[in-house]
Image (cartoon, rainbow, N blue to C red):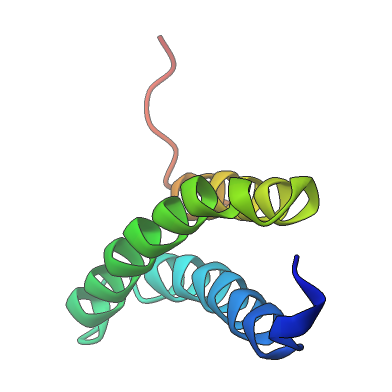
Length: 92
């Protein structure tokens, strides 16, 4: 990252990645509640933002690209993981 830009882009970058993680948790936890639609819309919007950020972060440096890509992977895994044992589907 260019040192002349200061710390503002780094804080914005970090904030978007943290919001992405929290949106995936909110989308999972709000299942069946009145907030489900809002949480899902927020998740999909941030999924697109983090995905775009992962592509654009390759110009900022390898650390930024890796952080955005890992956040994208964690978002997808967090929203699909189901920890409830009683609601498991049939095994194939």
